[in-house]
Image 1 (cartoon, rainbow, N blue to C red):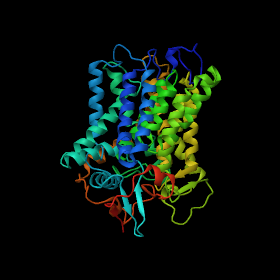
Image 2: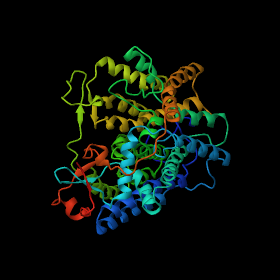
Image 3: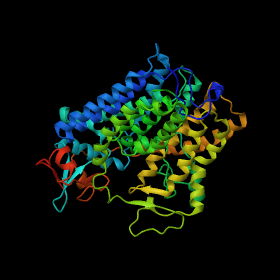
Image 4: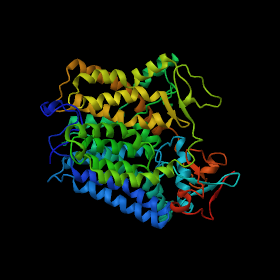
Length: 512
C-alpha cells in the first residue's frame, strides 16, 4: 500500500526524525476496535431517539462507513506490543481509571452530580429522554450522552447494584484504546514506564501561572487550572471530570495521527468523526483543521482522486441529521468573541470574562508555549501539524463558548495530544535526537506541569467519597430546568420533529 503524505516534509527525511512514526503500518485491528467502541453508542442512540425508518437508514450508512474503513486497514501478522508490555498498559489504564469520578470508587468532582443525574435519567426514563419546562414546553436531552448510553442499557437490564463497575470497565476500555494508540514502546522497560507516566501527568505549568497571577501558592489539593479565565486541562483532569468528552476526542485524534500518512486516512476519519458526534459535539470541529490539512496535502500531491468521495458523502449523510439534533435550540448557550479590551456583559460567567494581554501571555507561555519552543527544533517530518497545533492553542482563547468555555476545554485537546506525541518522541524515542540541554529543560517544564495532574489524583484519593445519586433528575439538579447546553426545544413542525425524532413520551420528566 502506498502512503499518502498528509504531513509535511518528504520521503528523504531519516525515519529517526519523524514524530511518533513507525516503519510498519498501523495495526488495523486496533483501529477496528477503536471504531467499534465509538460505534456502539450510535447504535443505541439511533434506535432510542429516532423513528425506526430513519434509524435503520442511518445505521446502514454507519455500517457502510465502518466497512469502508475496515476494508483498507492493514492486518499485521503480530501485535506491536509484547504480552508483558500490553499487560503494563492494561494495568495503567485500570489504575488511572480508578480515580475517575464515574465509578465513584474515590472522590467524584462536583460535575459528577450532573453526570450522575444524566445517567439516572437515561436509565429511568423512556427514550428519547424529554423534560417539561416550567412553561410546559418539551425539552429533549441532546448533548454529550454517547458515553453514558451503554451503561444506561446496563442499568435498565440489571439495575443499579453494579452500575459503578459498568462505568468503570467502559472507561477502562476507552483509556486502554487511547494508550495503545499512542506511539509507545512495544516492549516492557524504562522507556515504556516513563512514556505512560508522561501521558498520565502531561500538563501545562499551572503551578507557575497561578503563583505569578495571584502572588501566592495554590492551596493543595484544590483545583488549580482556573487561575485565569482560560484553561487547557491536563489529560488527567479531562479523564476525572469529563470522560464523556475526552475519550472520543483522544481516540479520534490518535486515529488521525496513526493513519495521517496512509491511503486509508480519509476512510478512517470519515467513520471516526461521524461516529464521535453523539459522544461530544466538539470532536469533529477540534479535528477539522488537521483533516483539512490532510486533504489539502493529499490533493496537492496526488490530485482529487486521493479523496474517497463515497466515504465523504456517506459521512455527510450520517452527520447532517445528528448535527441538526445536536444544534437544536443552541442559541441560548453563552458564547463570547473576546479580546483583551472587550468588556464583560452582565451575568457573564468567569470562564467568559475578558482577559488582559498580560494574562494571555502568561497563560500561553505557562500552558504550552515554552515547552513547544524547546521541542520545535527536533520536529522534522511533521512540522506543519506541530505548528498548526501551536497556532490553535494560541488562537483558542479569543473564541469561547459555554458556561465553562467548553470550546477551549475540548478543542484544545487534539493540539495538546500532538504536543504529547512530540514530547514522547523527542525525549523517549529510541532514536531521539534531543540534546542533553533540551532533555533537561523539557523535563523541567514537564515536571512542573505534572503537579497539576498529581493534584487531581491526590484530591480524588483523599477527599471523602460519596455515593452516586441516580434518582434525582437533571432538572432537579439544575433548579427546575436543565441547562441549555444539555437540552433543547424541538419544533414539532420541523423536519427533525416530524420525520426523524420519536414523539414526546407520556412519561417525560417534569421540570420546575
